[in-house]
Image 1 (tube, rainbow, N blue to C red):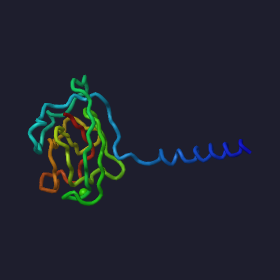
Image 2 (cartoon, rainbow, N blue to C red; image 1 turned 90 degrees about the horizontal axis):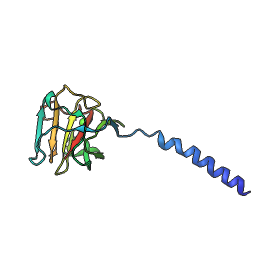
Image 3 (tube, rainbow, N blue to C red; image 1 turned 180 degrees about the vertical axis):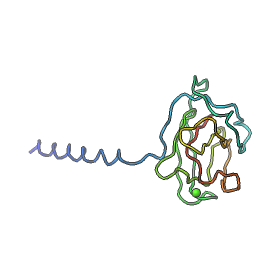
Image 4 (cartoon, protein in one colour; image 1 turned 90 degrees about the vertical axis):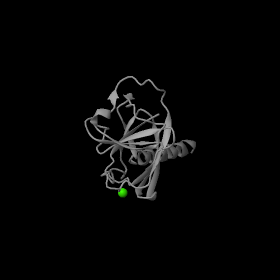
Length: 155
Ligand SMILES: [Ca+2]
């Protein structure tokens, strides 16, 4: 009898596991050890940059830190919301319905995040860098509304 209970329990665990694994992650790490560009962190603001500021793989000189980027599907911090727990110096590609959906976001003080219109934080393309500030509306004519596909933060 004891064996039967154990077997049933084991089966339940085995059946339960794949369900959890099938959930689509909101962010997927892409590559490691990026060297972030030297854009300001201590001057809050939003900076549109060109390909010359794209990160390069290499040795990370700063200690890896963790931050939460809050993102919303609508402007003015409305609609679907999620706090994306992220490591610095790590590119993340958006998933779970977040690709091309973000319309407002918050980057915590002391951190800068570079946003990309394509996945994998590709070099050679324009980026949007948000330093220690909130962006209530990406739909402001800058062309960054509903286009963010990946990001990389640093401190
Ligand atoms: Ca949106």
